[in-house]
Amino acid sequence: MYAKWFTLQRVRVTNAVQVRYQDTRENVPKYYPDLRIKERLRRLCWTSSSTMVKAKKFVIAAKFDGLPKVSDFQLVEEDTPELKNGDLLCETLFISVDPYMRIFGRSLKEGDTMIGEVVSRVIESKSKKYPVGTTVLAGYGWRTHAVVHEDDKHPLPTAQLRAVPADFPKELSPGLLLGVTGMPGMTAYFGLIDVCQAKAGETVFVNAAAGAVGSLVGQIAKIKGCKVIGCAGTDDKVTWLRDLGFDYVFNYKTKSLSEELKKVAPEGIDCYFDNVCMQFAT
Ligand SMILES: NC(=O)c1ccc[n+]([C@@H]2O[C@H](COP(=O)([O-])OP(=O)(O)OC[C@H]3O[C@@H](n4cnc5c(N)ncnc54)[C@H](OP(=O)(O)O)[C@@H]3O)[C@@H](O)[C@H]2O)c1
Image (cartoon, rainbow, N blue to C red; front, side):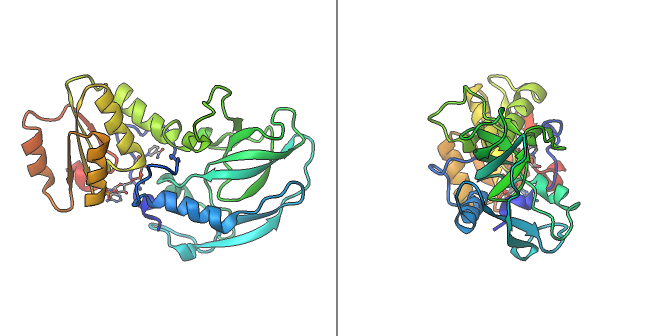
């Protein structure tokens, strides 16, 4: 269930950039476990009303170090407090699940609300800045509702309370602000364009290629006219990446990494976008 959390290693070429996850439900391959978590969170948590709201939230039931288990979390209810001047009551629309949570999760204690960024709608407001109906991004974690103050500051720059930009296209899901137009998209774009400086005609290799970041790296590289090689850990992912237009994809669990690379990139690789490190670093 928590397969998206497998990635602990920082991206070596992009570790200066913060980003986040994606979300439209259509065209999402079945193996995307993080989206299934989000659906489950929605089904488990959804309640909606205006004033007095019983919020549901996931709290840490047992501290985790390494891969978290379902039993490390507990779903609890709480009444949201009355709004004071400057407060807004947010109803969560999308919740993000990202690799960094394993690292930041280490500092959480039992009973703490699970961290994470969200896209929410303001359903009650005593804030002129964020009137009812505003769609906002916030960093209040895995909860259905939260009361936040308009001036609240979050330690993570990407999790600051802010309204969705006015020019965000209405026809797009605001969930994309946690994905391709959010942190993962920025990581992929700036990592590939600013750090790797990929150019047309160059060969790009990306691992964890079916992940939130990797899948975007490959697609941006194709748009830029690069030859794109990707690897992933299941055949389903390989098929999906081929559908996305990657030039060559292989399952690194059933094929030899070095042999495949020698075969498909005999001249070498110009840009290596490493999402994993570990066995790929040697
Ligand atoms: N998401 C962001 O916004 C963001 C921002 C900054 C940095 N990063 C970093 O970028 C990297 C990719 O993030 P992401 O959001 O794309 O991750 P993701 O969607 O969770 O994808 C992670 C994938 O990495 C692959 N993987 C390969 N070797 C692995 C190993 N030894 N252990 C665990 N997973 C392994 C797995 O796919 P296979 O089955 O194909 O092996 C796994 O599904 C991470 O290092 C993350 O910390 C992400």
